[in-house]
Image (cartoon, rainbow, N blue to C red; front, top):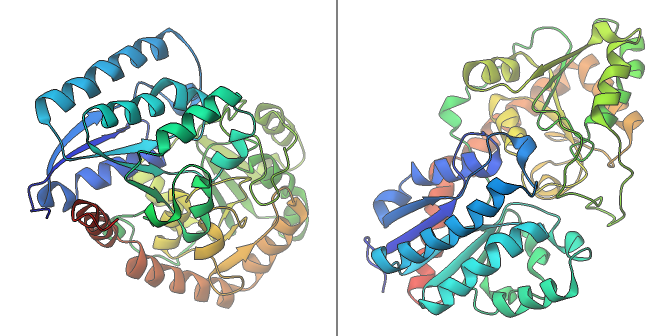
Length: 387
């Protein structure tokens, strides 16, 4: 039986940068979890920016040996009963950390909880070396519990973890830090995320001419890091088809030199009050990703009370109800994006109704306190031997 001081080793990335996994780890450590269990944290983040993710370099090689040493030492010195770890969706991640984490847990007889914050593991595995896939299946046989971010993502562990050991732990947001506001400043469309092909940035930009011809004063604001590749996303999640690569820098140069440059603004990475201000001033939030687990940016926009447009990938297909709190469009369909943006910009009643629904919905379902409580329940269940 677990008591309130069960030793829990938390292994994951910590900000900066302020991406979903990093912020998720911070929220977990700042929550009731740190009081419910005796927690020790091991930070795995060696990236200085999101652009460094997925790159094989000297720092990554050094981090591999450091990771092995630190996890082994934590097992020896802390002697946790449970180890919680953010699993990856890349071959580099599995070879560089994930397989080794599971092996170390097995050697020290520590119960392993792995959490996948992505929706493209099964698709990516098609590109993995057969030996890596074999090792993944063997290693995952010892996983005590696997977590995904939505019911529809349970299949990400197909062939790896038994369904009875899979639990759902959605993303969370500190709702009190995102006061709802329907006081959008003009017809502003906000994109908040990596400005890459995989996030749908290129499709969003291509929707600008259609919208701007109908609403000349529309302003598209793009916030986030821009880099040429997303090395961990290769397939459209809904269909499993590979998607054609586009260079976001080329798309950025095209729109910036076009007649619609006045309707477009790229502001780079934003945090804190600047990020909140952009969210509150937006009329519509758009995230037309090709693959997702559960976008924190989408959750933030919903918390602030915005109508949203996104693709039915990952948890988004579950949290966005068509016509109720937002619209779902097919990945890559820039004209569908344009139609839905125009509909929301020209119908303030619909826009505000959706936004009000979202603000309440997030507070009821995805508050940091609620998700922390679910995490505590899952880990306690595991300790009781019921998982």
